Amino acid sequence: MKFSDNLVATSTYFKLLAESIPHLVWTADPSGYTDYFNQRWYNYTGQVDSTGWEWQKAIHEDDLPRCLVRWKSAVDSGEGYETEYRIRRHDGVYRWHIGRALPVKNEEGEIVKWFGTCTDVHNQKTLLEERESFAAAITHDLKSPLVGSNLILEVLISEKIGKLNEKQADLISQILASNKKILSLLQSLLDFYREDQNLQILTIESLDLGTLVLDCVGDMQMQAESRNIKLILNSPSDPCTVSIDGLAIRRVLQNLLDNAIKFTSHGGEVRINLSSNAHYFKLVVEDFGAGIEPEVQSNLFQPFTQGATGRRFTLGSGLGLYLCRQIVEAHQGSISCESELGVGSKFTVLLPCSKAPA
Image (cartoon, rainbow, N blue to C red; front, side, top):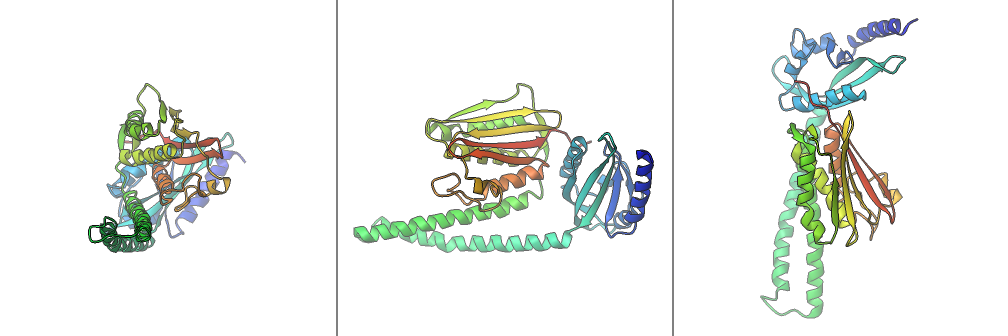
């Protein structure tokens, strides 16, 4: 049996299955042009014909740019597609769904069809957001008494209301230092919850990635110079136009540069390299510092991961790289690390260079 015959048989079986499962199901041709939606999709959305690009009218306007960027990236790269967006129900109510799609390839490895689903996750997402809002509120409330306590301790240590002996001053200084560490952690947790919520609504726009990287390196120059560290940038002279949330990607680069500078010895250097191919832009931040322990590297992009004392990532809350991964993956990209103790670390960010279809 020829591959084309197999594909017809598979498509027929798929459509029979698609009409019987409790999901919104669709297919698309190799270019990403949708050519089929199951009846459940039409019953849910109330649309008459969603093929082509008509399905876009059912997607929430805040989610559509991100949805299109990721879909175009998947079509161009031939990799699986997954993203979250809100779909308008026939009564006008929007509910969160996870959209997923996988390609079917022929014997030559060419994509001949995309098979996709949309799964309602609105209830789970709402519960998660409520839990995170509660945790953020508790974190915020915990800050207030600590701030008040620190003000009192600072008055005591200043000796404005009485002289302290050496032991008393030392104990108060230790308490004050501990409180400041707790405040720093609480602030990081607040940033974590805020950033996690912000990732739900990315502001996608067409930007020159080269200019963004150049500006970001310039912003970090003073911090590097304070440690006599050179920032060496290598980027293409031609524009690197990409569809991204500029503020979010800037935060990723700032975090990577901050870590690289922080853990590079005085007088060292940090290299930043931007390049591209037909599918993605590649941004590399490389330092020649202490390196990262092998046992830490496997969990490096998980929340609250830190290195051993005296090594990398002993400062801060351990949330920075986790947020970097969240931001990059929200752009349908990837972030990875190569590191060797005593040699240094190299962080690589890949961002799809395709634009969303008009």
